[in-house]
Image 1: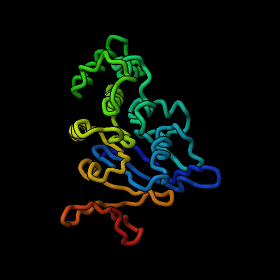
Image 2: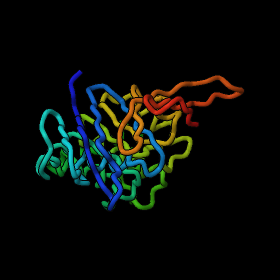
Image 3: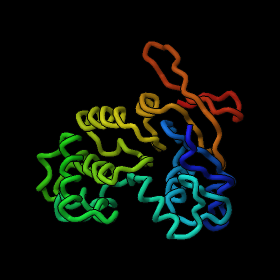
Length: 241
């Protein structure tokens, strides 16, 4: 499978602490990589560094066959790698939903008419067409989350980077998000604490531990009800609930 994204030996520090300390990963076409770890492990930092929103002190990032070293390199990468922020309010800033969803395509150089047509098509695809003229900041948390995803998808990216995508979702929007993501062809890196969601969507799991990524796997063990345990290779035989 084609290698899309690669991080090698990435180091990012916060003061004296290395949040990422030699973190490496590869994402290939068709893969859905679940990225897990406790709060503060550096999962969001890794996504932000990958997309060029934080600078690495050391290591190499290669996107779609090209090293990313300058802001120009990362801008080209962001045109092909769509990043869903952890907080939808950080992503939505236009007056109406259709304006927000069209913003990315406009940034890619599409004409206003074509950008709005693409935005409308994506909203319809996600069954959000009725929200097109709504004022963005008056949407519910779940609506904002799906509109933010629509804005990412309107750019027609090759890769999706999803940071806690189930945040603020009620049951209806949660089911809709799972349905949408399950049907998309893009490769994905998904950060989430929702083990069922990751188990449902991911093809591979990596755990961020002590600033590095280790391969991991979900195991379901039958109980009176089912728990998903995470086994991290090379980290002892401890079960995480």
